[in-house]
Each structure stands twice: as C-alpha cells, then as structure tokens.
Length: 458
Ligand SMILES: [Zn+2]
Ligand SMILES: [Zn+2]
Image 1: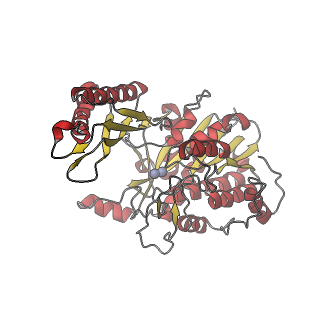
Image 2: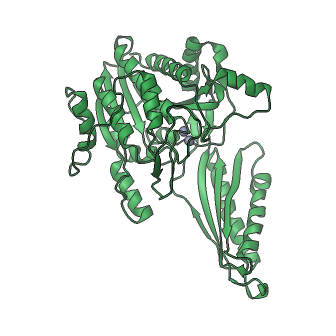
C-alpha cells in the first residue's frame, strides 16, 4: 500500500508494521539506525539477521529510510502469496512468516524506469567470524529447523549499498530524469521471494521497469573490484526427491525382500551417465545426489530409500533433458530389480537461470570501469549457483536484467590466498567476513553511477 509521505520517521516505522497487520497490537518501531552512517546500518543489519520470510525488523527499518528520502513506499509485498504457500506446504499458517517485500518509487520527471533490487534474508548458519558485531541470534526456519542465524551470504552488504544508492539518487536528483524503483526482496535463500513479489503485482501495481539491476557480493574477488558475466551467469536450480520403494524384511533373508538400498545405489551410479553420456559436452549440467537415507539398523532391510538431488543447468532444453533422464533412470532401475515404481517429485518452485542482457551488461560495465578503472572490472566464467533475481527478467514484460559481482574480500587476504594454497571462506561459510567499508563504498559508487547513466531522458 502507498502511504502519505509527510509523517515523522518514528511514526512511519511503526506504521510499516501496524498497517500490514491491522488486527495486531501496535509494535514498537525497530531500533535501527535510520538515517545514520552507512557503516552503522551495516553493523546493525549484520547483528540482527532475519531468516527467509521473517524479515520483519529489517524491512521496517529500511522502509523508514526510503520514506525519509521521499520515496512512495509499499511494504509487506507478497504476504498473501507466502501465507497461501505456507498453508499448502506446511499444513498451517506460521504466524511469524510473511512477504516482507518493500517497494519504493521515486518519480523524477520523464524518462526510463529502473528497478534496483536488494535481498534481505540471512541463513541458518552459526556465525564464527569473531567480529565485534557478530550475530548471536538463534531462530527457527519456516520449515522448523532451529539454528544460529547469520548474514553469511552478504545480503547485509547488499541492503547497505542499496540504502547508500537510494540516498545518493535522492540527493543527486538533478543529474537524472525518470522513475527509480528500489525494491527489497525477502527469502532469496529459499528461492521464493522474487516469485512472491511478482505474484503480488510488482509489474502491475508499479511502473514497468526498462531495466532490472542488482549486485551480489563475491567471496572470490577483492574489494574495490567488480565481476560480471554477459549472457547466462547463474544456473537453473531444481530439487528432485526420489523415494525408492522396496519390500523390507530381515537382513539375513534378503531373498524375501526387495532391497531399496541396493536399488538406490544403482540409481545413483546410473545417474552419473546423464551428464557424461546424454548431454552435449559443450552444455553445462550438474546432477548431484546430496542425500541418501534409508534404514534404521544393521540387520533390517528397509522399505524405502530417499534420495535428494540438486540439478543445475542453463538452458530450458538441458533442464528438461536432465529431469526426464532422472525419472527414466529411477523407474528403469527399479523395474530391473522387480521393485515397485519409485515416487519422483520435482519441486515446482524452481529457481530459473539468470540471464544477463549482453547489451545492458556492456553498457553498465563501461560506466563502472569509468568509475573504478578498467583494471578493476573483470569478466568471469558463469557459475552453477542460483539466484532468484532471474525471475524479474522472465515475466511477460521481458525486462533486460543484470546482476553483477561486487568484490568483498580484503585485498591483503586475497593476495595471501593467491600466493598460498589457502582457500578463502566461501559465501554461506560461518567464517565469511566481507571487507565491509571498501566493499560498501565501491558498491554505492558503481551502482549510483550505473543508475544515473540508465536514467537519462531521451
Ligand atoms: Zn546465498
Ligand atoms: Zn545471496
């Protein structure tokens, strides 16, 4: 919903919570450093991580920031979608989850429309960095797993850069013309937040962007640098569950059973042939069996075995080839052993591959090179990780999109790792510490320059 702009900050922060749940008692505004220095915003976000679909304080604090900059702000985007999904998947509505998406619109004369996205959620990772502002939060994921919570994917950096860009764009409004849409997305880590916002009318209730742009911190680039991949940059991510059906019995009388462990082992082995022998060697693909669970005891042959797979690809054709192949192999192997047909489930909410529009990529990288020097802008090979930012470029509106890497490793640590066999902590590691100050400063500089370049009237 769009609210009037002239309220005080404290009121607005309260309103962000209260308007979304009219029946709930008034909540105190989050004690965030609204309007404070970017490093204070960063350390606050880092110390107060919130899990996917629980980004309540984070979204309220940053919505208040946008309000103060005279953006027209809408909060709780995707709420209904999230509740419907929670109901479907978990059989009940979990009170504390929601679509905490935030959309801020700043209209500044005629010209193009640009959407800049940051993601808000943290991970169920117990922080071990030892920084003074380390997270001590323990919380429960929406699937019921209790764990420490940490911004181990650097989304706290994304939000801080996003705040800096919003401030710079509001302040430098005489340098651009058009419409700037700043969005905060919930639940990137579970691949559902972008869908929730799109389903709630992101491209219907607000101006349709001419471009979507985002960045992600990189644990493999030094701070002060930017990396990019034109075309496919990140992969389709599918999760597949195979329940191998057997006939259980005594481990000493295997001839009276159909052993699902043996059948599962054959399936795992046969699956290796998909990428090796079915896929064009020029086409990237991954089939990983990340979990194989069966049985309870040495001398019992179980009824079932459960395989959990992650499947990665770039093109829709490769994705289909791999998914069809998995089903064929699982069924075929079960049949060979005379076992019942296995149950195969492909999770419907998959994360599609991220495609960086080549023209937009080269334009933005040109601008960024002008800001930080060509030597600090590096083209990368694409990766098989996934990002649901891809969803914004795959709707009927067909919006050219770009996500680029923002180097986040302390340059000295980076150089030491290059010279030795030391491997740097990756994203999602409990030891991941971004070189926050330089990374944030670079992020704000390059994203603001890109935004000003893209927002020029014809
Ligand atoms: Zn992540
Ligand atoms: Zn991430």
